[in-house]
Amino acid sequence: MKRNAPFYWLFIALLLFKSFTIFGQTQDTVHFTVSMENPGNHIFHVIMECKVGPHETSTLKIPAWSPGYYQIMDFADAVTNFSVRDGDGKNLEFKKKGKNGWHVEKGKATALKVEYDVVTSREFVGTSFVDQQHGYIIPASICLYLEDEIKRPAEIAIKTYRDWKNVATGLDSIPGKNFTYTAPDFDILYDSPILIGNLEELPAFEIRGIPHRFIGFKMGDFHKAQFMQDLKKMIEQASGLIGDIPYKHYTFLAIGPGRGGIEHLNSTAVSFNGADLGTQSGKIRLLSFLTHEYFHHYNVKRIRPIELGPFNYDRGSKTNLLWVAEGLTVYYEYPILNRAGLMSEKEMLDAFRSLILQLETQPGRLYQSLAQASAETWSDGPSGRVNDEFNKTISYYIKGPIVGLLLDFKIRHETKNKKSLDDVMRTLYQEYYLKQKRGFTEMEFRKVCEKIAGVSLEEIFHYVYTTKELDYVKYFNYAGLDIDVAPKQVPGGYLGIKTKLQNDSLLVTNVDWDSPAWRAGVRRGNVIQEIDSEPATDKNIEYIYANKKSGEKVHLNLVKNDTKIAIPVVLGTKSERSFAIKPISNPDKIQQMILKSWVK
Image (tube, rainbow, N blue to C red; front, side):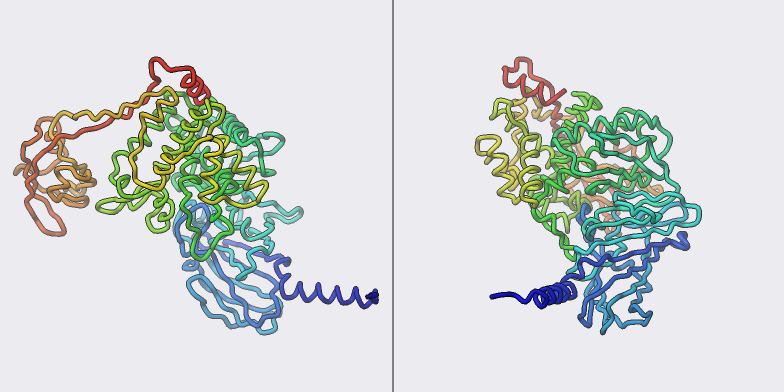
């Protein structure tokens, strides 16, 4: 059929316009202006301006959580003084929809102007906060989005308080607009924290021509040039492991001391106190923390379980693979620092020994698998149910890196050291992030591991999906390492409690599971008044461990659930395993190769 050219192009234009009107609102930028008129009140004031489609109603929502911290935060609870107007300034009616939504009766309005306050109360890396000295913004906690339009571009302008001079973020700035930033969609906006105040910036450096910045609030006194040199060495090793740097700039945001850390695509927000760098142990602890958060831009942001994007901002995104996303990231903290010359072989082995000790002294390892710990973090918390009287949970931050270590040694052993866990990470990055542009499934992760190892990894994955005890001796031997797993009796009588003086009372702070005190009914939170008819003190407890023997009886008078009771405890014998790790005396050629390539 011959087309009438003018009519045809008019028809196409009308079709495109209709498509844009109904579906294309995702192309209109949503504008946010964030101010802090009186930061002493701990309030951010937010103005949101956006175009809307022809429907008579619109639903505005705020996420219930922020990716990187796998807990429901209920950000909507902090939103107050909510109002909505149309483009002419007319007030529009709205009502709350569910836990985190607002249903707006907009009629024929084509634009909305939404104003609200966000009250902040907690200084933590996963929550927004403002006071008279600085501001910290988690965009997911203050920026609304139009339901089903998460892919709209966004722009956020920060109006700083009085003489505050600095704003730092991983977002791209808009030339000519002071403290104004752009994001191609809300996933990127929500993945880009913002730090505001009179901030200090350390000397930046480049790797492969890509700038890396470190900007912070109250960072303390330390050797800043040396710190940045060390940070550069770490990033060179971490990025070299994968073989690619996928961002065009990277920013570390030091938000102050003691408030955690969360990773992002091209930035990370971390608690930071430079004074920690004054000792070798403090330096390793802080550099390990920064290595963890930096390596996450690969392992979790790009090398990711398929459930972690697109995100469900209402309910969270549950996955069995946090042991990979978080656990393997913990594992890589130590090899990366070792390869960078910032951590010795002994320090690395001691770090893994510490993780093993933490796992093996917790009863939860007998009850919860690594996959279960990953999936149940939304209810259990990132470290498990640590406040339970009897903790039947584990942390994927502890068991995950240990299984990662065993997996690495297994791959190296089966391939005669031609392959390693590094090859798994590179393959996942290239195949699923670069090529398929998605995350991987549980089965795909296993298939990649087994393809690179060239054998079945049934036992390794039993360690993931069951509570099977780990065979440390077998796997450490692959790398020419010996680990001491033999139980040894501890001298003295064993009671099994830890205490502290509080308000002139001896408070039980912990009771070892299945210890004599546990079996007798002593629990955390009990107050011990007398030990063998003597007023209870820390010295009484020390005396028991030093002078009493297994089989002897100790009489405790304590307060339990507001009731005074007497409990006799028959002391036992405590056995401990040291899990000390050292090279074996006569390694074969493959063991030597594996250990030499694993430890620099």
